[in-house]
Image (cartoon, rainbow over all chains, first blue to last red; front, side, top):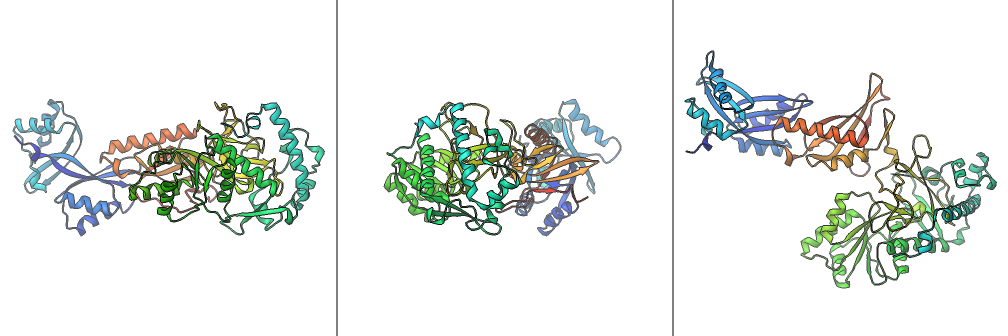
Length: 144
Length: 429
């Protein structure tokens, strides 16, 4: 079975930690009519990585690169969660029991329920386990 | 191979005797220059003050600005009719520096160049294309006459028209070239476009600007030559002052012709072998324009180990200018050292900025460096590791803790010519 359709392209953008950098990224994406579906910022010593799921990752990549940004694609997966107490636990437990490590994660809650975006160390395994546990993975086509 | 085996392999005792004899002679020769006559009188120095080589430390330094102030002929120790040639060095600020040569000077100079070329195995069987400026720049005529002295077949092609240069290399079977490393790079690119691989080339002599080991590798691969570093400056005749031998681990400086000191540019005190500082040279064989303790501004060190080729003590390849030196918590730091560290780390770019601040009475150095576009994985952890790696490499090289800031590619200023990579904010407070 083709599990590739569950692998989603996240854009990761290197950014110095100073005022205006996020605005510059967001403005560039807005200009290209690229919609940001989910996003987070990870911060380290003086710099950060802006991570986002967008509807047109290739276009976002080219636009940001042409502006001089350092940008890479990262493979993530998205799992539907119940938008109620214990919802996150259900998903996290599946991965924990399978010995799959979550490197980072962020979530959003929309009109169709809550979604957990996961960066894991073993993507293929994670997809298999989540599917066999009965939880719902979101397909790439929903985002891009 | 030796051009003058006896003098090139002179034992220490004989060398020092020769140096002292020549230092005394030079001391007498500078008395014909008003600047020195006055300067030495002020310092209370007479011919009898120089009894040993160590006495040289009594003599005040001569600086580039002194030579500029003497424009045009203030430093000539012989009448103009005895001067058979004049060269000038480009003055980035103000007037150029004028250097003059007697007939004997030209002979001495070309002899030193012949030594260098013979040292790397060049003979009269070689065909030599000299691709540098033949005008006021000393590199053109300097190498030209040295090569003729060796007996090489010399092509004075000078600069420009790279395609024609390449045709001549191929048509004349050129084995040896002399040019700047950046021109050599250009030459290799044009040759590639023309679809020729310059088969006859064997040896590349590169100088007049600093170049790295990675440039050496690239040039050797692209041109099919063994590349040698050449060092010199017009004030000390021109090229030929120091040169790499076949070991290519440091440059032999000709101690019978140049008395070498390495000093701490801050204090003027001599530093030990193996310690980096500013090269100070007293030329021992110059007639027209003798100098005492000339501060070259170039940063190097006297190397501790002897050389397999049996010639005298070597200096390290030039790693920068002493004007750029910083003192951070009492430790001398040259921006070129930072550049060397960064060149070895492919994940970061070669551009950098250094900021020096004083925080709670302590010097703090911050190095900004760009991350390399090709090596960005998108993972924060990789970036954090990279940051730690740069800090560690800098600490190993400088023996100094620094703060490293990773910045976006292309965000640091690019400099043409003299760069201002260091911003010292310590006085501003």
